[in-house]
Image 1: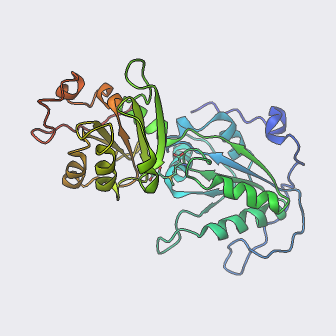
Image 2: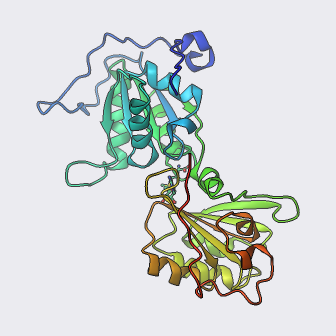
Image 3: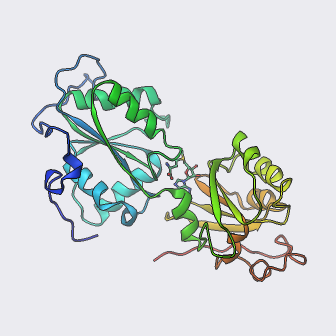
Length: 310
Ligand SMILES: C[S@@+](CC[C@H](N)C(=O)[O-])C[C@H]1O[C@@H](n2cnc3c(N)ncnc32)[C@H](O)[C@@H]1O
């Protein structure tokens, strides 16, 4: 991403539609320790918040509109997953952002900033006249609490705009060569977290299930799905750290995947894909790809390989 278009938001029309230009000269009010103040008194309503989806962590998968918002921002309030990696990747690509970055993914001691505090911070910064980008992993609206942040800002009278991002639910399977739908193989898909909703996911192997935040509850999810029409030998893929340095693909069946994940020390973040589309992955073992599952034993040999992206 060497050639960066630095056109202004207003040049591009929709980013600044309906919003006053932020006062870029306004000073952020700060506590004694330098952190933004969370006091509730509004002094200006000229700031605006952009909820920007960062994608799965590769700067090449940030949208152009998202990049332009980052370039115009006074402050970037960034998540840990996806967002931080994109900022680091942009810097490595020579993209110079002038905004102050507030990392709300973790604080010293590794505790995430509570959602209430993030909401209050966004409002406070905007009330201080700042042009604020809330940079969130994947898409802000997919298990990202983006809707809550939008409502909180709107209720405080802050102008908000959402810039969609490429969700990990679609992009992380793609990096393992798995399309969520494919003619003759799968006609639809459902994205859920691996908790209670999973019992309500119907369909068979031609309806792909994508699990986010699913590593800790993988064994339960696999058992629940195996009891339905998909059956115990339904193919499953786990894609860890998609687009990251630790990217890894593990492929098995609903009967075997929890054991494989434990044996390999599978860790979050990971996307789990369940359904016949997994057979299409170049990382799928030959026995799985040939559609003959009767003789397939994914524990018999090593079926996982390191994915490489260029
Ligand atoms: C709180 S959800 C946020 C999802 C995000 N809003 C999106 O649209 O991708 C976090 C989960 O997304 C998935 N995830 C996000 N980025 C990922 C990545 N680069 N590799 C694998 N999984 C990822 C993991 O399942 C993780 O537990």
